[in-house]
Figure: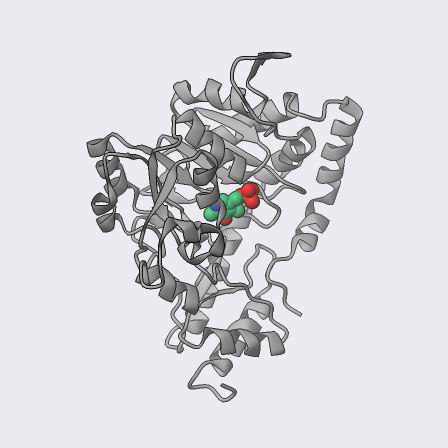
Length: 370
Ligand SMILES: *Cc1c(COP(=O)(O)O)cnc(C)c1O
């Protein structure tokens, strides 16, 4: 069986360092925030070319607090994409603001910047581009619109640790950037974790207060806050893993090149890399009108795949009250029917990649089995 992701092999390779980091936290007796979290915040900020980073307990919490720190609340509208993990939209709704969806560019799968202007109203306060699959959204065009209309830009970089837009790290290009350290992400904890990064000092104190019960000093609650603190164990683990992130990202990128070569001139469409992007391949998604039968055929060959995502957020029952219908966002809807994510993780072997690609070719429409 070729798994979709393999966290076990990665752990085996870094086990002594991880186990030492865990033991050191257990010995320290500091389990929530504290020096490991501060150390990781400094190192992650530097990695993102950002001045500040604030550790939180998930990517969802990062998005929620970035929105609150930017002053978003009831009556406001936030423009985003429907072709994303549901957390992007949930975080907007937690604040009481209304998500407004713009369709995707069908090549990059990120928000279609040409359609943003048409969605801006008097109530619009922010835009959340999602760097989907590890490929940056077109930030320059988006920042231009944001400047014209005085909108805050919050990057959802949960899938894009280390991705570059015109040579700059994602997360530090907009006003605030949000990362997830869910285990399967490119930089993953052994549990939950997240980070808000920013170059703007005015947001830092707000996010720090909000993640820890709004308390400036112990038991003195300046504002209503949350228990969104990052754990020391996760921070210590993430500090070890951060040292390997570039190496792992380069492995993902070379696996993607190999998939591209092996699937060239096949019946599936390989990912389109935008000229401005360093894609970090959180997901390597191919595209075909025969997605479901291809997924089944690959499963029968012992290959696990994923679908990111089968139902765009505007068609989810949980968000039906927003009033969108099938047909509202045709490119997002078609992508949801056609994308298929192939196994992608740093430790994939050449033989595994060849087996996956050969199986895709055989199982595709002009091949023998479908
Ligand atoms: C994973 C993810 C999130 C949420 O992160 P969690 O750490 O799981 O809360 C948000 N947005 C996107 C695009 C994601 O992939």
